[in-house]
Image 1 (cartoon, rainbow, N blue to C red):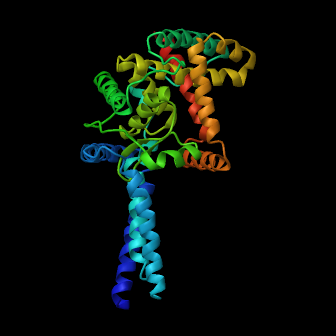
Image 2 (tube, rainbow, N blue to C red; image 1 turned 30 degrees about the horizontal axis):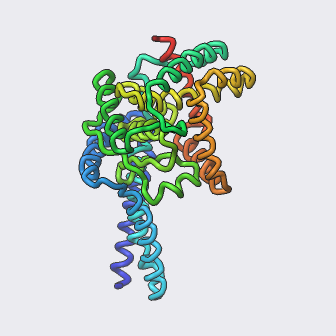
Image 3 (cartoon, rainbow, N blue to C red; image 1 turned 90 degrees about the vertical axis):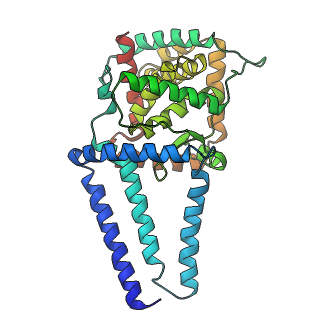
Length: 353
């Protein structure tokens, strides 16, 4: 390659990278993030409209292919002793990664909480109030359990992944009709992560919003957990970026769907978050409440724990550290502890009933 031409390409790619970094920095300010939000919503909905035509996860193809392509590109030029020829395309690829991450996802952390559009507030409450709400939650969970069918071995009988994903979308349509929390105009398909589901499980990732395609993916979990995780990832496509809020919007969407299976999934995961919070404050009371669950519910929670143990490896610790770091980088200062804030929204929800 002509040196003059190569230098021009390198300079051009560096300018693009610099502009991308400036854009990323600007999105840290609320006034800029507010301008980006409607554009991001239009782009996300448009991408979802297109990629939903494909029934399988594109992430499972694009992600490995992207990294393989970058490595092959660099190695090919190095073998030919073209020491700098690999730089322009590599820099442009990095620029796109940064831009897509900010434009489709990260900008949202500069905006107020999406839950401000809801009649519920994030507040601190006493342990007694948390216990009272958890008791109400357990009543709902036990009631929901008695409405679902089970196999002879006690495992819950749920509809297939796609059917329940469609129900989740219906729940979000009902939620969007009630509250103005998103600028999205299209609800795409949440997809199973396919060949990446198992690797994700070893990294303690139940689901992921792939911002480079604006695609929501769900990994490996137990049957009763799929609807809640599906709803959580769909929340991210609607601009609900914070994890604690995505959990709560998933809870509401599952209930808004008006389906027994989704309601059970929502109540079970809400109970897990609420009772975990009680265990941190009062382990004895947490155990006492655990014992008030129906046997079938206890068995499902044990299945969830056993599923997690299957993937309890050093890789899981790496995944947790990466996830914790990403949360902090995105402005969720308490890192993984942010997930516990869902209990505050749950308390507000139950106290308002």
